[in-house]
Length: 375
Image (cartoon, rainbow, N blue to C red; front, side, top):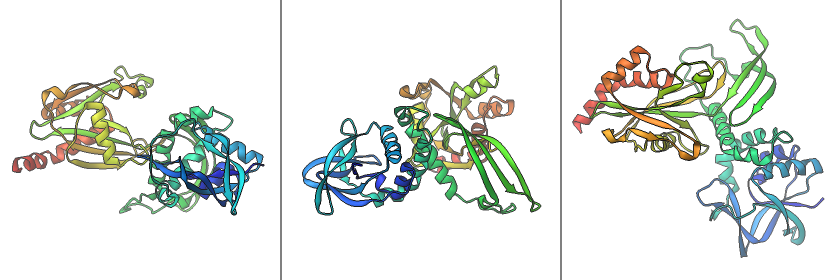
């Protein structure tokens, strides 16, 4: 087998072993004529042609099945193998390395695998598991086109695993009280559907199950309700929603806070501000955290983070908005506070984030308005 030179994220042993399907030995090697660099502004590396440099990396000799798996993974990002000459054990030898069809962005600082691994290692391994189970089922380029949401879903899983509920009330049971029996992946797409089988400890100490439940896996999202304490009004966005339509709702266009999925590597507050710009062309001021919660814990694996965002809301901000490249068709409305309270009471606010956000505003409105008056 021809040796393969690795220079980037696959040099992270847990990721390499998962993608290859077996534990894979790496030997230090260098690729003359190239520099390993961060892609400027991105979270992955590239090779920059430099006659005065040699990219540090690793050499592997994968078994045929492992090479097929590695080729699939790299093909998701349109990378293909090319022959190279590398330095291994102070000897120049023939090898192959994966390259993109064209230079992927501008080179930044020198690539650092430890720096990448600290932020991205666990997330990338989680994402790669979703990618690799689609080998033989889907075209790799189709999988690659969804990698943004795959990685967002992976980061959501890692984030959830690190979060701890304060636990002022409760029996104190944890994931250690659950025994996995198997997972069947029904559908892998922009969103995923899976059937999970497990047992778990009961409150009386006995064992419940085995039980099987279908779960819809999305990715974490943020919502933000813009509020102008000077004009005492909020901004709502209106758009078509497939969920109410599929449910048979006579009015599948809902009034909502601004909302969007948290991209991997993006802070939650940065997502709130980005979505406000994209959906309503708003620049938000101070963000007031409302809560972290599961909207439908019985069957949807997703956490929402809700905020109230202070904003300047003159008459002209209402109108059409949305991200053109994402096919969004959004109409924004300015609603005086008194009318918003009436809408809440009469059922015109028909989704949980808006109800929660409106209730938060009702609790804190006087304080927020007083803060503005005091300057």
